[in-house]
Length: 270
Image 1 (cartoon, helix red, strand yellow):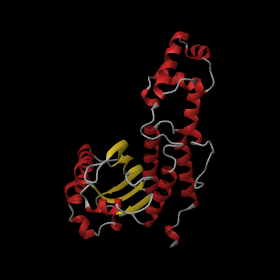
Image 2 (cartoon, rainbow, N blue to C red; image 1 turned 180 degrees about the vertical axis):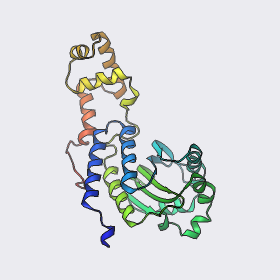
Image 3 (tube, rainbow, N blue to C red; image 1 turned 45 degrees about the vertical axis):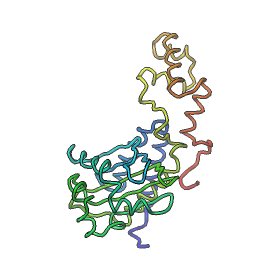
Image 4 (spheres, rainbow, N blue to C red; image 1 turned 45 degrees about the horizontal axis):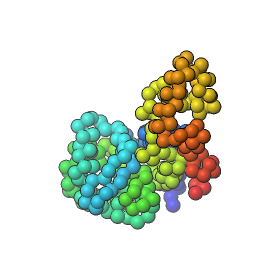
């Protein structure tokens, strides 16, 4: 391996720091996913990134997108063209099918690995969608515990005319995806988990007080509201997280801060 293609210690530290930050946001699937994608595009060096949980329900239909975020498009029109590709053109695109048919739990490829320049620039995928979305260079990674149950799908793009992605960027994305993917549904909430952000602000504040160990009376005093109101907020929290006691609430919360087994696992100790 060429020295220039090796991951630097500073890059591994940055990825480790990012994983830790995502774990802090772990109970909220949208919050940790947004933070992950925003940081990842800086680490790899590209303005446009799309990612989320993708599920395929048929071999010839578009993916179901869950907690999916699409960041960095230069205009709303370009963003809409990308969305059109996802719903209309992706499943029939030769480069996507070549990528998605590769074996393994984690697959990460540059565009050049799945299509030659001639194939790419003459393809409907590029001419009808990517060109109009203003992007060319592409780097994609799927972490999929099951063939079409993709826990973490990420595609990263650079604008037309900018440098293609190389082996170094591919290794950065692959390493990061390998670390984040194994945590989804464990230390990081998946898309089916209840989201704190959907609770009203006062209910969120009540939740945080409960997690810090306050009784309902202490919450009422701390927030300046009546005990009866706090009790209603607590019932709302229990319904939202599908629990019936504070012990169950804490157990659910800790699940996403310490992993399913509470083992405090670190990078690459799977």
